[in-house]
Image 1: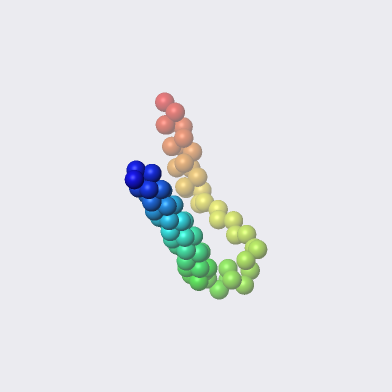
Image 2 (image 1 turned 90 degrees about the horizontal axis):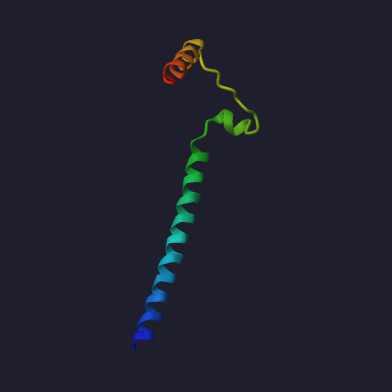
Length: 72
């Protein structure tokens, strides 16, 4: 009787584990589709082009000063 209960619990746990894996994979696919659908036209036309975003000199200066004063 105890073995039957344990085997049922084991099967039930395996089924729940499989369901969770399926849900995770489904959400991952949905998230990727959502990101792709939200891309701008320029990104869709030139997907291999890299855009380098440079920080303004004021932000670079602020980060430099922050690094200096947080060391003390």
